[in-house]
Image (cartoon, rainbow over all chains, first blue to last red):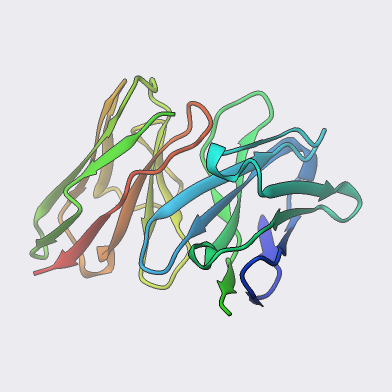
Length: 121
Length: 107
């Protein structure tokens, strides 16, 4: 079965960076885009970015373009999202989610369990 | 960027009621509209895609309609297990924006 397993909770100080991982299994890793979505406490869902695990192409929402780096390691079917220059309002649960198969459009049908990132001095 | 606007932001209804949530896109997105359900403390789950196609395993009391800019999620016969926040999402283009959510409670 499709599984997305994310790394554990993190506590960071303002100005620091955090790197969250998402390991995919149960399907062909390079056949589907993967997305990052975050949710601040008590707030709604915010789409951040996608990565094409096949060729590494990526796209970020404009508000994250200067602070987010997306990478992947196909040998271990894992993607990474690094967020730099953390602020208190980056405190949120960060989700990875499987998106479209290549050459098609489809929403996110499988989600990771979420990674809580807390930014606090 | 395409903005997604949901209404209402919250609602309270009785068990068995018909519940309707609307979602409006700031520009046309054809039928590339998804609905998600997020129960308290849980991960979002895909309910409907392509505006009206039920994801496998979703009860038939859920239905979706619309195309272009105006979309609707309907729960025909609200059940206690439907207490959740519902989000629409544009997946026609990036950024794949979400609506702000509609919190559904039981009266």
